[in-house]
Length: 409
Image 1 (cartoon, one colour):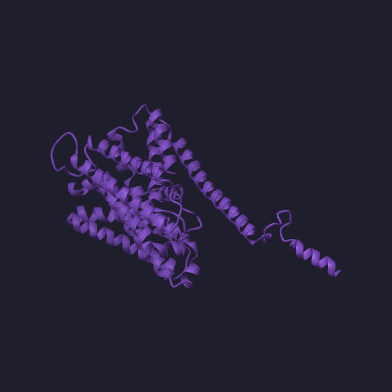
Image 2: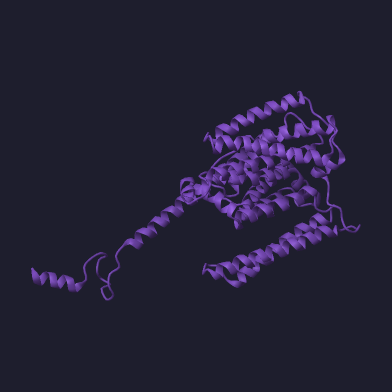
């Protein structure tokens, strides 16, 4: 999907006459798709466990509505409202996780009910009207930029963050390669590895430079980087991540292995609620208002991003980086089609076909791998003829045995 994203970017860069990769448009891409990226990270974890969450769009709207009331009606300070909003999202996730994990009601039913309940609660809280404007300090979360350490035409802090990100990526690749060598796994040639690391550094630094010559990295972009790094570490290098994959691969096998499957599922939905609340704050800050229609179809965007990014409908498969790539694919397609003047009807149809193709490709790969694996197992089970009897049929007795048998007869 990284290669597919690169092809899509190049295609729309040509079709838009160079508008897609202009610094202003790249910044807009980050800000416009920030809430989808946040939701896609949480949705990937939910799908890995073998569940689905249809309520995230309504939770986004509800948390935004309650936060706007606390800010404009009650006069609470922004830090207190942010904490209360995240706690609200966590409680919503705990409520839904309880019914799914402990009462064993299917996640589709529970989150569908949550989608209706919290959409109605949003209407009640807002009274059918929008609430705004919001304080400047909160608006910065959705449309502000990280301040530079020194005033100038180029944002030096963004370049420094790019250097640090490049160093971290190279160190991560070196560690992965060293671990593969230690366990005797195929790691590829050294020249290919060096070329891959060099390409990563070039991409990151070019991206950082493009942002640096505009206004620098957006605040929500920094939040996204922190979330991607944190959740990637959790899923790849901690016991919690391994348990999540185990539950999605086979819940019964994970339970028999000692994994507390119900607790794992419960906390995955709590995490989804917290990230939905964060996405609600970001979306509200970008709009500078809380609206009754906020969050509409957000759940489908997040689900599509997860599946396009490599998640399996059967669970147990997927990565956080894959979810981010899937969300970027959707975001670049939306932005590119808007820049070339394609109608909303065509945009929706094309996005639906891309989602269908991604899931079909996933199923095709699973079937292909399963078929080849079965063929290898059958080949391994065939008896091997002894040396010097290359003309014998598989499973036939050696020549000496045949001669002895005929003599006895």
